[in-house]
Image 1 (cartoon, rainbow over the protein chains, first blue to last red):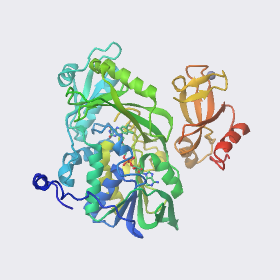
Image 2 (cartoon, helix red, strand yellow; image 1 turned 60 degrees about the horizontal axis):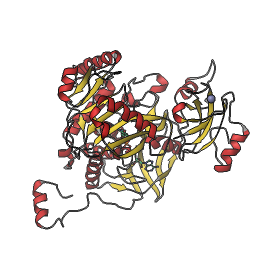
Image 3 (cartoon, each protein chain N blue to C red; image 1 turned 135 degrees about the vertical axis):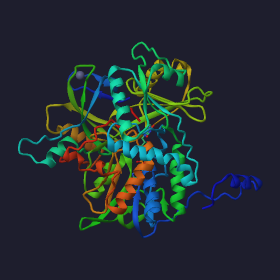
Image 4 (tube, helix red, strand yellow; image 1 turned 90 degrees about the horizontal axis):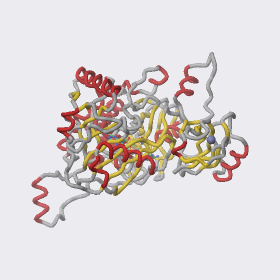
Length: 414
Length: 109
Ligand SMILES: Cc1cc2nc3c(=O)[nH]c(=O)nc-3n(C[C@H](O)[C@H](O)[C@H](O)COP(=O)(O)OP(=O)(O)OC[C@H]3O[C@@H](n4cnc5c(N)ncnc54)[C@H](O)[C@@H]3O)c2cc1C
Ligand SMILES: [Zn+2]
């Protein structure tokens, strides 16, 4: 792998950019790997990367039915924050957020992490109490957040309307080191680093079956033939249920559609991320100038990666009240992704009833921010059989009543 | 937008008039059932990419619960039927079979 640097850009400029090489190889699958990861989204690629980097396990294949990063990783609104209430969530999301800080250097790939600050508006008395409680919990967890007044909100976001008729802004939970990153670049950066370690990323190859002997996984069937492995990681977000069925067990989760939209590009007008959970809408401005907007999920089981018009309308209606100046913006694109929601809205990172088979899923509407931490913990779990970062997120928590009662992945909060 | 026929008041209702109630025909095991059964009742879901039997409420209409048979991969609706049944009536099963030959969903086919 050729190193990316300012020097490389200058060198290539002098020879008409003829010297760049492909960021990753596209090999044919081998007969056998130590580890197979199903799903080349952010979580699958990060798992492979830390297996190689932290544990020296490099005979790894990442199998993807479409193109890498084409699932939710390439469809999300890229909000990164770690201001959760419960300790296990704060731990894994803060691990992820802190890894994001150095990820571009670590991967030698610019993931455009932009810690511009994330603001969650309180628009009811209930939300004030909730967010103040979270700010106190975060102080104990060592996650830097603070409760801010409406005046400070206005200072940070001049375009906001503080005294909306129904839901005035009463304050906000503010995480200064939260922000956004370039979603595709996160997938591409991990993919390039995995490929450089000798791992095989096999795209356009669907896993169609899981093979096992004596209760232990021995390989997978794919549209490119059977491939053997010692360990299997299923990291397929909305398709977790399908993969689990192939492996002979069922999961406490369901897939529903979440959608987002972007406006035409405009001049810089808002340099933080604002989330308004009471009115169900959130917004940030991309580097290109588009306003990136997200809202609620459809209420029903759905595998079509598109949204419905009335949800987009609800979201935009709420945001127009909060930011009156966006009322005449034209919307350019709208799309959807299938998010996997568990019973307690927290993720699953776990061993499964099938030996050697692990699952990482259930990130629902909020897993982009978790990618580095989730990959870190999942790699530790797969390599050593145990990870302090992931143990609270095991599958058996539902039977044992150990819920992680957090709307980590709830309808709107990313 | 999804449109479902309410089997009670006969209205073809828009999604905005309806509340989705999740998977239908989930069996609640009685006293003496074990942890696994209770776990499955509360949390485990079929989550199929295909035929899904589910509950809906005509919230902004007659207010009653009913069932729908729908495809989660295409959003096609096979039919709706009243809530007071343990499994889909024969005409709904036939309507599904006509479009998805050989389908099965839990113990129904
Ligand atoms: C509209 C929207 C907005 C969002 N906004 C945010 C946000 O602001 N902040 C945030 O933190 N999160 C957000 N999320 C959630 C976030 O996108 C996801 O939690 C995260 O990207 C999940 O990553 P993943 O790697 O688990 O899944 P994915 O990126 O979906 O990757 C899974 C991959 O598995 C592949 N696959 C599936 N089945 C098979 C098979 N049988 N064989 C081979 N490959 C298979 C798929 O093709 C896919 O590429 C949002 C999601 C959506 C849809
Ligand atoms: Zn009705």
